[in-house]
Image (cartoon, rainbow, N blue to C red; front, side):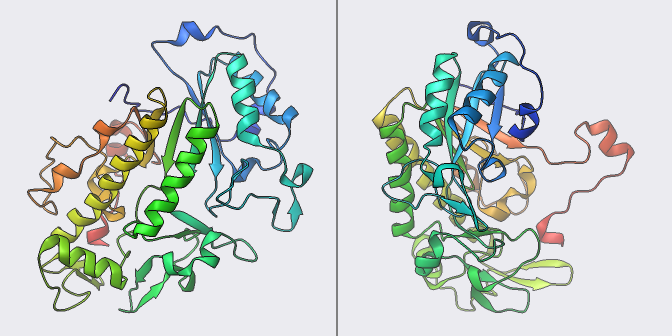
Length: 359
């Protein structure tokens, strides 16, 4: 791993930057030791960054502010793209409003052109295992035509339903596919290959490279794949994995193995994605965005630590540390979504972060 970003400067809203005056450009060579990243969210900036002028304006301001690396969302939560893809559908309108130029503008090509002129790096970001936006009206995304790919959710009432039929609340906006399905993996690999092959990007960023939450995936394919991997027969499905309880989750006899298997699925896929990217161009950086709450991040099937790090949590199997994937990466970006970011204040305010196992 060349460079681990422990704290990402998330200038998340490019719109904010666009309201500030441009500063004199800072030579890129002054930032070889330190890198400053600006994330240009796709959905939030459909209009702002939907024209050549909009892209040029934000790149100019970013360069003047000392930014060295731009992350450009090009595959949205819906699975639709903001570049000229021959594989996935491209966004031409959003919530009934047409994009500038009816969506013909290739945002990624414009970013690469403008950023490289100014010595900035460009990393194309894709929402890997999300293929639908469940809260647009109407619902939209690739998953509507590929319903056999969708993840199956184990609900609090004991039912198991496909994600497009489940409303888990205000935060349930991403329609996830099942990361273990071979057809899903082949499709996501093809998207990443298309980007890396056709655009001179400096890196790829893999976001939502994970399961939806602890309640997925409980479809027939996952059950069979887990049984084969673990060499067990799950006799009481899904209760031998876990049961929903008022206090959180009641672990079943296969629970810890299940966590290790899901994390293995994610690491094995990322191993393929990283190898493919570097085979296309060894200089292309492989990056992942993940949540920083490591003690609880097993709930989405991710172990972003090193494969020789054993945190010793009681939900870990002896083999769980081997699922750590950070050594596959050039950069790891961790989202620090906390009311307080300094431990002193966390302790003073008695802030508590809830383990999914305890409700």
